[in-house]
Image 1: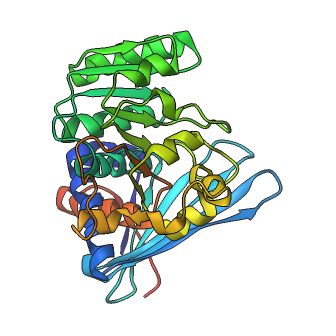
Image 2: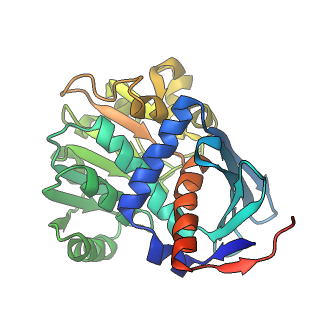
Image 3: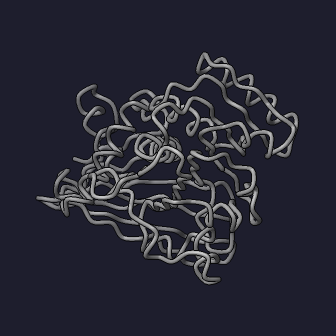
Length: 319
């Protein structure tokens, strides 16, 4: 019997600490060759697109897919988990909240390996659905003392600052410009749906680490060419996927500002094959598109906890 696990049950089970550990483990398996990732594919559905991505992780005992629709109504995300040894369906997980948490965790893992050890100030551009998880994850891996946030809507950024201050017990302050958010921050997150850059390289101080985590489409850019040009280390969650989806890198490569040989996989950084920060004054850039291995690594943790705690509804699956 497979388990059907709802959003509310995922919320009860999954913490950011668990997600950080699971996502880091997933990237370690990618580096070791005990996990394999298949990039996102998008199929037109008349009003938007049907999107799916898959991974196989024999090292974790699981394989599966994440699928979701965009357009024609609210997006709904589902993760299907299968046993990599028997092929049996293990679980169907409602995965909107899980996806939000694992996206934050991916930035947290990148920050752990790429930001300065003494980085203690964070600037967040964007205050939408994904922003809170980004902030929470980074606060888990660095001792953040001050957080500045900016979005185009004054009301939204003020509400976000107030709610995150209460949620994290940290001082989160809304500011009136993206530049003010960035210029004094040792870690910067861009988590927007912008089509044009919201982060300019001339604003960055030496030693800054950037997580660009909002866009996963080649027609969109969150960072300008100067960010890419100034970055000594550029890391993607998956370089091959970035070649298809990451407008932040596709356009600079096309214009000769950087090359794909300069972009490294996060899995190799986690495994110690690549140094995520060779020098303290380096500017480092992480480009996050979102990978199925992240969903599987977190999903198998959720499934195992649901079984242990008697959560989820058993449903028949083909034998």
